[in-house]
Structures are given as structure tokens and as C-alpha cells.
Image 1 (cartoon, rainbow, N blue to C red):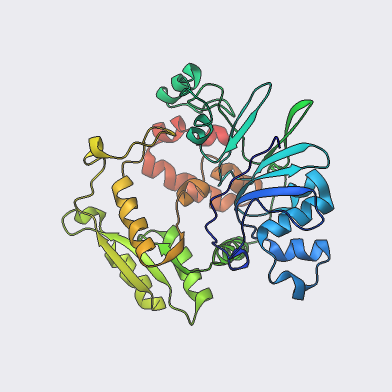
Image 2 (cartoon, rainbow, N blue to C red; image 1 turned 45 degrees about the vertical axis):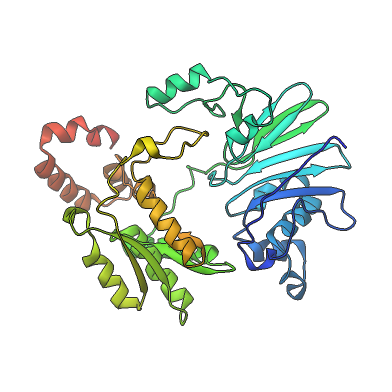
Length: 377
């Protein structure tokens, strides 16, 4: 008929082993391809009224289809996890594309008067056409200016990215795209002490790590000596016990300023972790760049690609299909420019004064003022 769907299935979670997609359940006029996982399975199972004994063998893809049958196009509001998916509703003649709230899984598309092409990578969309696509001059200008491009734009003309937390519906009338979730920045959390904030944060971090441990194979952690990946490793080691956690780390004998074995060793001894350490003195940034395999989706911007390839190859050799990291934790939890305003709003005047004095002494009044901390307060 008018529809073709394909999927390269990795069977990462236990419930999906042996499953083949596109998926279609008996008695349902829906077809699905899903890249990703659901981390709130139990919540969805309870909301759908599925007996726990029947849910043990239901894959995440099955739960998505059952959720679509139950909630319709509002089902995406109920999902937590990393996913990109396409659902075809044969009954209504509609196709839905959706991405998770933070955009951990990608989805690109091209839509013209007669055809819609959707794929996980932009070059895969481009491959559906007889000629390679032209570069999008506007997005290319944003790229070289090191600025964020407009939502949905890619480096290729007429190939668009579906934004995180968005749904695209396509039918004979055209397309409609809407946002199904956004953070509520007006919802504030107020506790009496820093300890209560720490306990709440720890409970959320534990929930996040636990959701990533559901795997068909050995779970590993890409661990440096920083607070982010070591925190994840400690939680994972505790949750997996008595099974031993395996970590993969990069070490340096010559570039001693980059070596973090002292901190890695502390975590290993505390939790009995099996540590794989990869020498990376020769994998300095952009080494042998001219010999790197070209990525046609976008230009290479990660100077540590050689290091990461060694980590991933070792993890693959060890049989790991899931590798947790602490990437971007520094970006997520940076206090930013509002720390002084937050302290004042919480009525912590003495602490605000102490922090103000410490920062002025450390930065100097001119730098402190230039960074805008007082204006932000």
C-alpha cells in the first residue's frame, strides 16, 4: 500500500527480546516503530489496568500501542524515557511521529505534496531521493556563527528535525505539529534546609539510574574521576549488588594532568567495582583527523572522538549494550547567575551576605559586577 516502515532492532530491554518491528497487535489497526524505552512502565501498566502477571512479557513497544489505543494522541504526555517513534493509524489514515521530552532520540523528516519520509538521521532521509540534498544556507550560517539555529532546521535544505517534546500528525489534510510537554518554571520547590534538597535530588537521581539498568546484557558505566559519573557508578553498583558493576575509564601515563586514577581508585575500592582502564595518551584531540570516517549527518565537532571510540569498542567487546555516562551534568546543575537571588528569595540573608563577600574577594568587585550577579539579584 502507500506505507513502508522499517526498523533495526537492538533488543536492549528484556521484554523486547524476539520482537520484530514494525509492530502490530492482534485486533488493532495500528502499526509502530519505536527507538527507545519507557522508564515509567509500572505507572503506565497501572493506568491501563493491566494485571501485573500479564505485563511481565509486554515490551515497551506493546505498551506504547496499548497507550495509544487508550489515550489516543495524548498518550505521549504519559511517557517517561528516551524514545522516538512513528505510529500509523490505519483506521484514521493518520501517521504520528513523536520524540521524548528532552530529545535524547532523534527524528528527521521531509514532507512534500505527495510523500513523507521519516528517519533517525538526516542523511537517511536524504537517501530517499535520487539526488543528494543542498546545504541550507541559513542553518549553515548559524553553524559557523556558533549560534543555535531555528527550531527544526538542519544543515540540509528541506530536511527538518522534529523538536523534542513534540508530536507531528500527518494526514490527507496536511501536517499539524504541537508540543505535548514543557517544564513548569513557575513551580518552585522550597525546603527548610540544604539537606532536604539533597535528599530530594538523590531520590530523583536514583530513579533515573534505576530506569537505565533494565538491560538484556551487562550494564557498564563510562567513569572518569568527576563527581557526575562517579555518583552514577556508586548508585549503579549499589543497585546491581551482589552483581559486580563494570566501569570503563580512560587513563594517562604521559598526560598526567588528565589522569584521574586517584579518584577512580577510591570508587573502585569503596564498591568492589571491576574497572577496565584504557590507555589514551596517543588519542589526543583531532589526531589523524584526515583519516576519520566521514559522518554525513553533520560535521565532526567532538575532539575526543578517538577516546570515545575506544571506550565504546571495549564496552562492545565486553558484551555491554548499555553504558551509562555522566555527560553534561555540569551543564544541567550549574548554579548560573541566580544563586544570590535564590538565597535572598529564600530569606537566607546571612548566607547570601557570606557568599557575596567570598565571591567579591575571589573575583574582584569589577569582575563580580561585570558578570551581573548583583543585577540578577
